[in-house]
Image: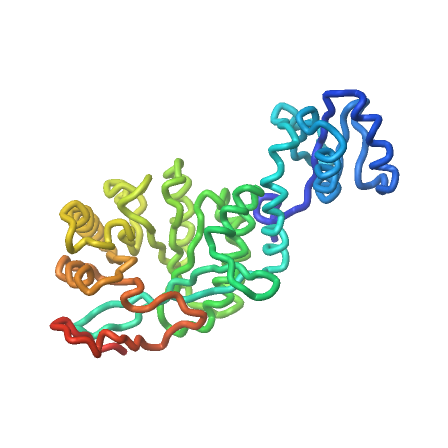
Length: 356
């Protein structure tokens, strides 16, 4: 199930020539290309399939003046639809360099890493869940960082497709987590209709017999959300099917503290910018405390992500935070940790935990 938005459908390009002499030079180029790969749209305009277009751009740069050749992405059945958006062919180089993301999505070269989320009770650390983090895979198996994947996807207009692929892979790999919470990221701007866009995700969860109450869908890139009603529609759809949801990076961007009340999440994650160094920064403490107050007023749990030092952890515990995540406990790992073995137990410290 999918559509042009959420699957990496191959498309094509309409190309226009500003100089008639350039058109005559193309006879040699097109003579060995099958007619079903391209077609003329007039004396100075062509449509061609995408893979033909990328080879064509090389030809233009070598044999023509690229400043006088313009193009725009277009479907074969409507090649004139986007003519007002035409740009010089020189601007398409970045898109060409990012073509690898299409193959990554189609080949499903995505893997999952797991980072534990913990609670602390009487100085005893309990793993209560795991955030599933997506990584890309090169053909040789080496890891591609997520920011590199999504940067390429944005250039190629494949953010919807990549978000969907990562979400499905995360669900697939969530089946090995037993009884604990499973945090799965999603980009709200990549979902235009929950019932349609989330159908494959929900079907897979059901097939794998994962309990809905285990799943916490985590809103990422919330600063890009302009339509709060659309976001609420998505979140209500999750909750109506028995899932929980969390807001990430609270305290920065769009996600002001006052707007928390509008979406009523189950879990609120304090952004790294306010967690890291909170023990020594009064402004960070103020934001952390305000977020905690509003979160608890809603009946939700407050999670501090990006915890890296003992001092910050102590400060957040004293404030009353419920859950914690960060390198202080464990880095993302290819397998979900069963327990946390910490070197901190062997350090001389007045703040020693028991880990299980």
